[in-house]
Amino acid sequence: MRLNAAGLTDVGREREHNEDAIFYLVTRDASNQPLGLFVIADGVGGQLAGELASQWAVAAIHDALRDLLAPPGPDETHPMGTPYTQKIRWPRTKSGRLERGDSLQTRVSRAVQSGNLTVYAQAREHPEEAGNAGTTLTMALVQNGRAVIANVGDSRTYLLRGKRLQQITRDHSLIAGLVALGNVRPEDIFTHPARNVIVRSLGRDPDVEVDLFEEQLRVGDTLLLCSDGLWEMLHDDQVIGSIVAAAPTPLDACRQLIEAANTAGGSDNISVIVVRVE
Image (cartoon, rainbow, N blue to C red; front, side, top):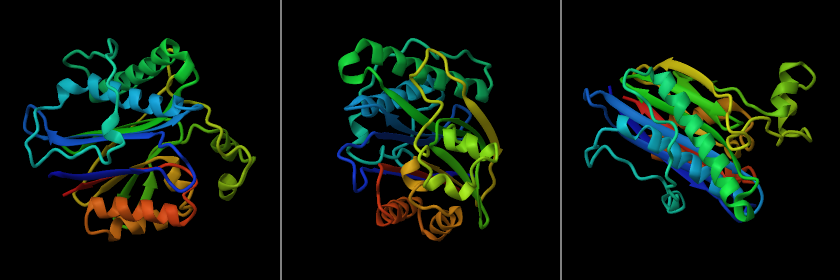
């Protein structure tokens, strides 16, 4: 079993700045088993606050899990996607350090908490440029076919198995709550006035509730991580799934998804990571 991954981020057609940040790395762990770290953060806040928050969160999560990431071979390491994502400012973090023996879920949860605390602290240290900084987050840590997925906000992780695309994560948004209560029809989430209100994000408080999910991956499966700039433009999950399934490579899938989202309007930044299990 091996992981084949690619990721891209795009500013879209209406925004001046890209407030998304992505990171992906495919390598092997200390036991020579396949290991992958995949992260998408979608910043929120005025001026540069969102851009800074997403970068801080991704950097802190990578730092918290650095000891898991064995030195990669030159053919197993992938670039971070675009010149934008390579501009990440890497702040020092003191939280989220993990002890040996912690479960994979514990490591992921603490890494996200480290990202949250970093955004919270950095925003208060730099109030003029990032005082209201926050970010959504979706991430997957895959080790030897086992995927632990974390989510805060409305960025999503999907699993494509066969021809079926299934959303693994749950959106932490006002509209998702209204749909769950039966007060709003699912098809109205793309037009409702409250569709852009998120109720959970990194950086708002010193501690954050993190949703965790676990999947045992099979050969032929594909993970898709994305910001809301993708799924809010492409309303039909089956359309998204068909694009991913038909693309010859993960990089082709990323390019085609971003092109489709821009063709549909591109009203937000668009970020995608596609991970195939081969």
